[in-house]
Length: 371
Image (cartoon, rainbow, N blue to C red; front, side):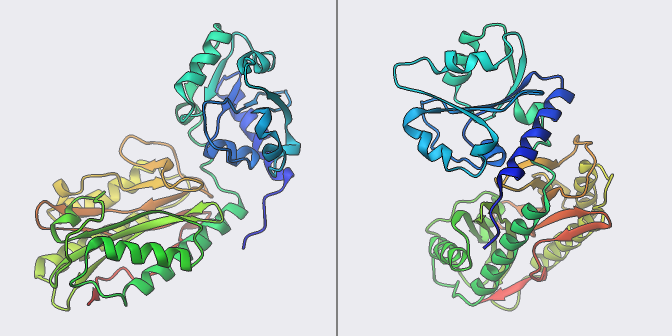
């Protein structure tokens, strides 16, 4: 079990957020329930119609507004002592309570998952204000991980690796995708995950759909099966993909495509270094697959950031020119998807170090055989 984050950790995060807001020429940030609020305060309330919002502004004490009936929970959050807490009761206008803490003509970054009724409430209470999504305004707010966050991500990756090792001993042939997905979920929990977010089991032609939902198709000998699974451990995400073959003699094309994807994944990993543009990781992986003749079947970006959520900035995609810096964490997951036939994807979570890249997944990349 990881050591908990302390008040000082949240104070430092909010101070960095305020500085980043100033650098982006924002009056501050309005943070509603979700990963950004958890990151900044350690508080994870239920997101409801009752307004909960943190206001972080340069040169000002952070203010956390909560419904009065939820204040006892908010006060137990690890970062509670780093904010000035205010509350409101049903029948009171929460926006009027928070308005004095905001610049009436300021431009604010607001959480992407803020309810529309809350954003509209701020605009009605403070008609001179304007807003930008936090992802657009401060995409790197949570992207560079602290050492304790890196340790949690490494532990989540190791737990996912143990899950993969165990699933290779589970029978596949004659069972449905849904049954194997249930095994994956149980193994993730067994190996320390507190939450299972997804268990993709794409067998045969279903593997050509990168986001296939495990269904009632019965897995057969001779199937290629894409396994993509992950969840949360100590609040931080895992996400790994391996492709297996049911039997011991895969068709030549299956082995060739798998080898091609494996080379693309390795080439992209080898390209990771401080200062390299995010899009370059995508370009390197895509070039290998294109040169192998399957470029049109690589139909998604090469990677996404990971942390408190499974998908977050930075993204390894054409057009993202932001440079990699030590502490960024993201997936490298090239794939080839042949409609109606099969798919192959190999995915690791990687962090940027001063010397290059470091994988948080260590299971073999070779095509594995299952029964």
